[in-house]
Length: 197
Image 1 (tube, rainbow, N blue to C red):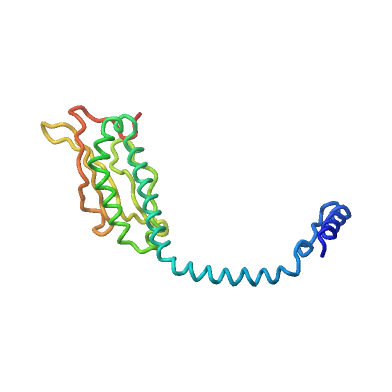
Image 2 (cartoon, helix red, strand yellow):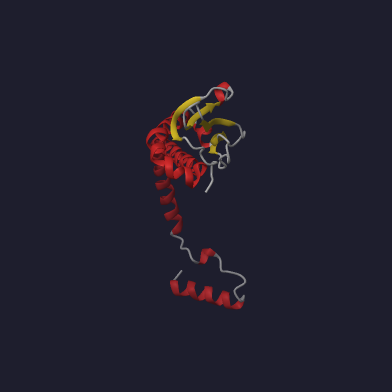
């Protein structure tokens, strides 16, 4: 069908129906579209075959990308937990001494998971306030069960200053054992509450 005829039909139909009924899409297309569709289908099949070959590469990329996002969220939760007053004083030491250990624990934990388990893993977004130990928990979104708990505890040994003891617990032993990530010395003075301004 000629182009001018198609356009004039669209205009006439639009005017007659006051725009309430739009013309059929078959007016826009040509009979040659069937040939184009078959060519598209052939190219899509070839594309699917090449995608299946690259699927394992993209799956590993997706895993790495997802774990990277989890690590970014984890680091953000740590700094939220600190609050501005504590962050100012220990941020650099935390980033040099504790964060690499925490990152390693999260990476080894996530590497041991299947794809399904990994992609249902979430990070809690409410660190504990005041004197609570909780920084964040990695939990299964489907069951809402914790899998890994990252905590920090204040310690005050006799005749010594205050320390922040970073540690984690796993579901494997029912979260009973403390696995140390490291300690940071605060001061002889009592540290402020978590998340305090």
